[in-house]
Image 1 (tube, rainbow, N blue to C red):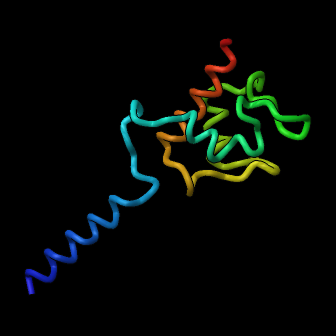
Image 2 (spheres, one colour):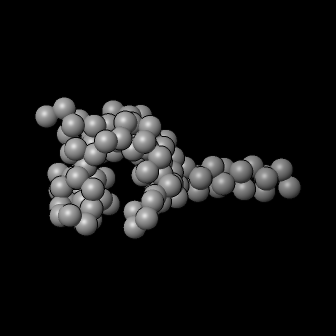
Amino acid sequence: MRKVYVTFFALALMIGSCSKKTSAPTASINAEKIFANDCARCHGPQGVKDERTPNLQTIDLDKAGLIHGITYGKNHMPAWEDKLSAVEISALADLIISWHNK
C-alpha cells in the first residue's frame, strides 16, 4: 500500500511540473517570443497596430499598471492570469517599458 502512495505522489509531482503556470527564472523568459505569440495579433509586432488598440510604446502605465492590465484584462483585452505565469507577465511588462525608453 505504501508503494501505491509513493507512486501516486511522484506522478502528481510530475504532472504538476508540466503546468504552464510554473515559475521559471526571469533570465530564461523570452518576452519577445511571448509577445509575438500572444499579443502581436492585436497590438502589432512592436506594440503599435492601429487606432483600435492602445499604442504600447507610449501607453501611460507603469509596471504595476501593465501587470494589472495583462493579468486581469480590461474592455476588449482578455485576462492572461490563467494562461501566463506571473514571471511571464512581469517580463512582458518589462518589454513594454523598454519600448518607452527608446
